[in-house]
Length: 114
Length: 113
Image 1 (cartoon, helix red, strand yellow):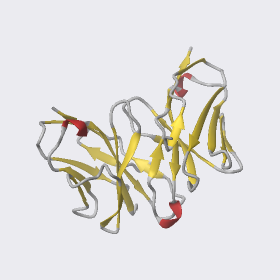
Image 2 (cartoon, one colour):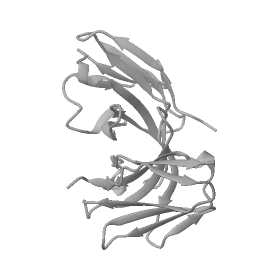
Image 3 (cartoon, chains in turn cyan, brown):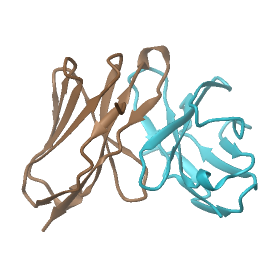
Image 4 (spheres, rainbow over the protein chains, first blue to last red):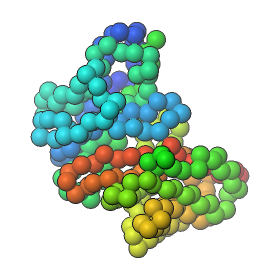
């Protein structure tokens, strides 16, 4: 079964450092997403991306965050200057065209900011 | 009121038991509904979509009541492998290409031998 892959699986970074989380969505998918889950909390939407631009973003996705699709396969989330409260599991997801299609999540990147 | 609200549990049930999860959502414009399961420190995985007429997939039955803004999931003959957190998920506006899923916090289920 095709899958969304994410790297790294776990990253520890110092407060104030930049972090890039990488994702390879399923190859024929057109819509890409980042969600995050703080430990013990619910999964929260960050941003959706389609046709090389952001289509929606949440209040969490402030100027510290950016996304990019640098080539035909990768989809990245950059956090410019990490804060302690950015510690969370970050899930990438992708979806095919069509409103009824399932969204597939990657296994997540666990970010710890110290 | 929380957008998607679930009983946090945990539910501890013996193997073979029937267990029911309930969920309410606050946004009446919500269009599509799902149950996901999440194992500890893993990604959410789609269990089933929830349709207005109700739907069944093996031991799992989902129901939707739009008037009450209420969603349910019933698991019959529970197995040890059903132990997980069950997430109620709502999508507000799938038709316009928007797929901003709103998750409940989840209900933890432990099936005991």
